[in-house]
Length: 359
Image (cartoon, rainbow, N blue to C red; front, side, top):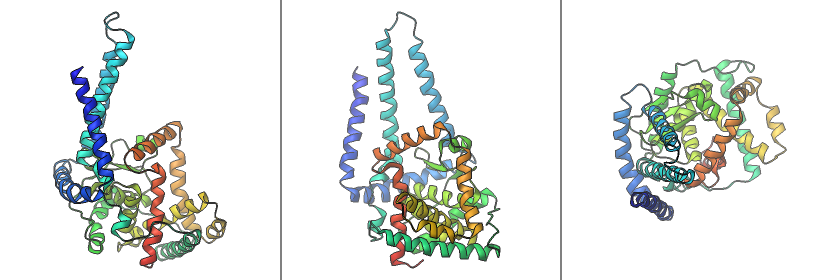
């Protein structure tokens, strides 16, 4: 029982620390994100980046196997040795130990980045926008996307195809950050460990295009997603890797990385990514001008937009909803109060950023 209380106490201490850090983002920014995390993440990227495959994916598989085996062992004790209530009690304390260890290393190696100073404050941006501003910016984006599509293909009916090798996309997503750091030096980036997930098909069924492994600092990309979206996805996961935990902020930094590139296909990927979010926001807010904007989308641009929808629809299933609910609550626990909806805060950053810097 003493050992059990130790793990419970460890969970309570971690909870209290999180509550304290929520109120002191400057501490996290100065002493964790820009000191401890930079050092530990650089070390992890050097160690695990050496391997061509995902160590983190293997780690998750092993841990999952250990949990399953221990659960089976607890319930397969000889009849009469333990009552069912005792077995459930043993399982409860086992899961407490797992959670205590998980959150200890999760926060120590990456998780406290959730409590750093928000990006909009660093960039001195407003937080809100009006429907009129959303409509105006969506028209600007549409013009930019239509223009780039014509420049790349020369034909409004010919969709843009990113035919680059996946390794090339990963390498250029990494090297492309030089343009972002020239403009915003505080978005620090050195080395990287960007890999295709060993469980890409599983991620597709779960509804995820990638994730950061907080225990190995490897940025995992679902290599099944359409290549047009892969550059922004890779850039998004690198943003997580360098310490930006917020999903909306990772979206925005990924957008910057794409749109600041020389390669027009990457620019197009970034702008169409932003356009998709704006159109979705207009649909959710029931803005009437959505139909007018959709009418002016080049046929090829519409085809590129539909590629993404068709891909995710092909993997839609009941487990997708389960994992969305799980991840929604996981984000809320980690200081992203709007859960999955926090991805849409990307539109807030976009509109207010381009108020200061013309598209």
